Length: 334
Image (cartoon, rainbow, N blue to C red; front, side):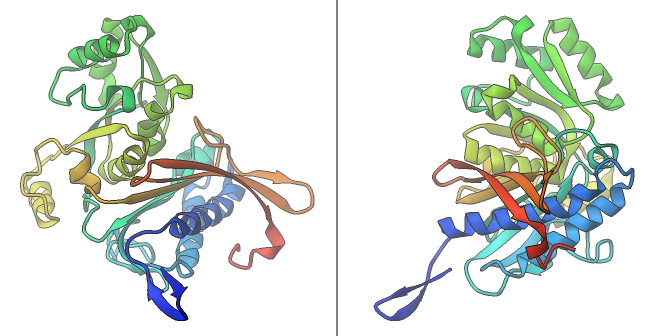
């Protein structure tokens, strides 16, 4: 970023407050572009609209960014691909992680918890997470540092209940509704805890324990590794904790992890492994209503309302932003 001082232009170092608000504009446009596809059964069209809009808006942001988590490799994605350069070429040099539409199936079916999300951190901070599953344990501030992914799930929930001062029967765990979680579900139900399932929306699910009003105490289970890094960025800003362990299926996946910079791909990854120890900004705009963000809502007079949040790790400031958009005045909205 640049500012004027004594008549001279001075380049600001690091990530400034103004950047956080600029990033919300990026997720807003992506959400507004995906919203018309809600309930239409075409998840690819919804994702494509969000991706194209996010890419266009990034051109106006004062950063020198590189995508480290995006829509895939260059030969798999026409835009927001891993390694793509984003921003207007000024400002700080940063890593960027994006999911233009987290919950493509959610939008296609008109369900809850779809968001447009991104995270930005200093160059070299964000884990170049491979496209594979990651075992995850996410908690809010009250349980940060008190649980371990190494423990059996029964031990984990017992420790959580004790730390929170509540019986196991009052503990609520969130996870994706997947067949691969069948054994985990059985163990949790044997322990007597409540389970709240998500059809999709791995990032939103992992963040949920950081907001007491959601009633979620822990997020457990496996989901995408790239989504794990995005969630870790948000959770750092919220004072919680996410632990992850890559679920490596074969030697080729192991070697891919090593090539992406992981010296021991099978070890448990902590917050610093995924998002570094420097500043990080996380921004999200709801596409459909969710646990902590409202969805895009169309109003009379060609207007639309969005609900967003933007957070910064350095200050742990959380801003919720309600915006009204006059759609005809948005030339980047197609």
